[in-house]
Length: 237
Image (cartoon, rainbow, N blue to C red):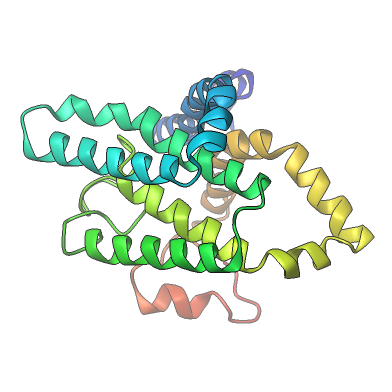
């Protein structure tokens, strides 16, 4: 917040206009909403762990079904605001996957099963049922998956947790290397900081590109020209 208060006053002096400042600052502040979610989910952790110990994977199944029911209600009735209940349902359910990991219940068979369930659900909902391909909020390309959170995020969490579970032994061997372990501990200790700053970093990178005449910003992301420009040696972008 302090950084952007200072940047607002200095943007014009380096040739950046109101458009950049408005978009970049607004985008940079978007991640702060997750702090509230993080605090609530952390506060509910004792109840979540107790629920896991009693009902196990049923807590995830109920959360998945609950998120789907909230979506169905908010998208097919006049109760659009009902969808915001998923701020709690979705993230608490995804948090249960972390408890499953910690409890070593992501065995290869279970990990494979939830990966299949997650992928199947995503293939059904994304496209045919109108949910957007992008799992972050992008307007105009289908049902927004994050504003409010949708059941698709739980399905994506199942896929991510499942793939990680399938790779658990390989990853465990990898982090036995001192350099990898040190890097992993360093990054994990600052994940929230990285998350909160990552869109600020994007805004500053865009500012540098604009200052350099628009380098890397001309090609549209949905064109072949943009993708061909990525691996080209000596490419300015």
